[in-house]
Image (cartoon, rainbow, N blue to C red; front, side, top):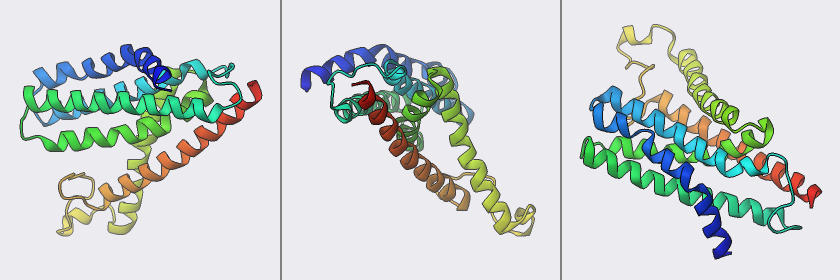
Length: 212
C-alpha cells in the first residue's frame, strides 16, 4: 500500500507543482485585497486541476491496479489527491504569509476551504465529462452557483433594497463576520461536495467493477 501510494504521489507531482506556482505571481506582485482574491482563484484552479489530473487515467475505466477491488483503487486515488492538496495548501499558506501579508489568516482559511470541493466535486465531473479541463471548468462554475443560490435566498429574505434600510449589505461576503450569504454558501457547497463525492465513488466502483 505504501509503495503504491508513493507511486501515486510521484505521478501527481507535476500537477502539484503547477498548483503551487500558478498563484505565485498574484501573491508576489499584487499585494492588495484584489490580489488576494486573484491568488485564491488561481489556487482553486490549481487544486481542481490537480484532482482532475489524478483521475484522468480512469476516464476509460480500464482494469484497476487491484482487479476485483475497485473501492481500494478509489481510496488510493482519494488519499493521494488529499495528501497532494494538503501539501499544496501548506505551500500556498506559507507563500502568502511570508511574501505578501504575515497577518492574512483569512486567505489561509479560505485556501483550506477550497480543498473540500476540489477533492469531492472534481472526481465525479472528471468521470462524467471524460475531459479533465471540462471537469475543472464545471467544478468552478457549480461552486459559484452555490453563491448565486445563496444570493437568491438572501434576496427572498431581505428584499432587493434591504441595505437602504440599515441592514448590512447582503451581497458582501465578510468571512470574519459571516452573514446569511456566507452561511448559505458554506451550507450549499458542503451539501454539493458530499453528494458528488458519494456519486463519484459509486460511479467509479461500478464502472471499474464491470471492467474487472
